Length: 188
Image 1 (tube, helix red, strand yellow):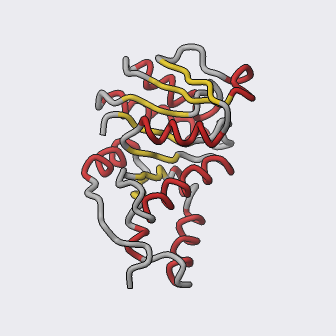
Image 2 (cartoon, rainbow, N blue to C red):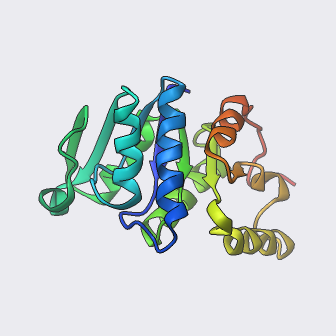
């Protein structure tokens, strides 16, 4: 696991803990001599995690759609890829990384997280996927996932594809220790 893809909000959120945790995650990534792959923006949690990794002397690669690159691109990145669409952005971010982590965010963050989970469930990859659950931000989502298991739409083993923790350093350690499972989506 050399580089970590981070999905997160382009807003800071209302709770200062979100920005503090984004900075702490960036510091933890750089302390392990890992690089960051992310959405390329200088604003919100995205900018905070990128700045922390850069301050730690590690590479940061941003991938941003052309349609809003001129508005929010981070100027100080190691590399910035300006791409044609959100689909291309997500695919490139995923391909460049050895693991994925979601911080708090909105629709885009949730979509990115659930897409890589779906790919793992279908056996398209075996990269570790983490959820940094800051101040219980994702508690309701985790309850929904449990409900989907009870309703028969997600296998209990597939919930293990998502590694959840509230501490950035501990989450990175869990991701490093992750050993892929092989549970087919349609096995009985």
